[in-house]
Length: 89
Image 1: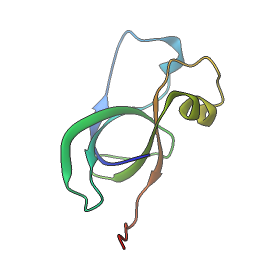
Image 2: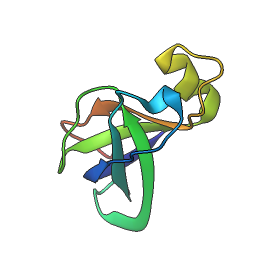
Image 3: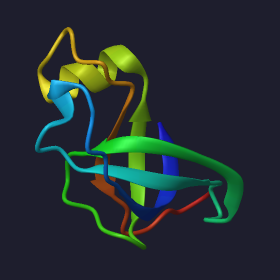
C-alpha cells in the first residue's frame, strides 16, 4: 500500500468502458512523515476522496480488481481510505 495526497482529478473523453462513471485521481506519493516523494500515481477513487486529502492507495492489480469486483478490469490502483493520522513508532 502507498500513502499520498490527492493532487487533482483526471478527466478523459476517450477511455476504456470500465472507467465510465468512475473518478480517477492523481495522488502525490508521500513517506511516513507525510513528505512528498516526488512521484505520483493515478488511482480510481473508492472512498470519495477530494483534492488535498491524505489517502491510502492499493497499488497492485489483483488486489485492485478484487476491490472493484472485476477480474478483467484494466486497473492497477485504487484509493481505499482517507487517512486521519499516521503514528510512526
